[in-house]
Image (cartoon, rainbow, N blue to C red; front, side, top):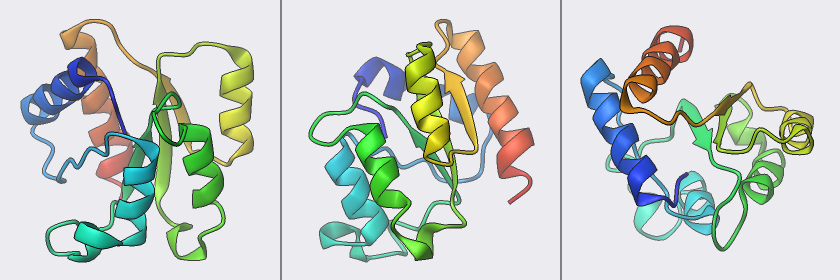
Length: 132
């Protein structure tokens, strides 16, 4: 879930550079993320919109914040096995603590440079996606 076009572009480029085989689907706001995860509307076609094995959540999203998405997610028993990593620009201890209280698997701060995005995606691939 990401609403910043620059971050979306950097993630897509880094995803391709690292050669991650898992599809990358980006929800532009929290409400769209919930519709995707619920399989509602255009997201009902799971062949086109498969259930993710790893969810990257930005905390600052329009319409429904990342925190609200995480709270909703934790009420969905069928989504318990989805790994959740917060990817946020916030380094604030209250944000980090609140995210961990919602049982996330990891908290990462968004990188600034493209090479750092590539390194982060490489770590995601090796540490999270290759285990799933």
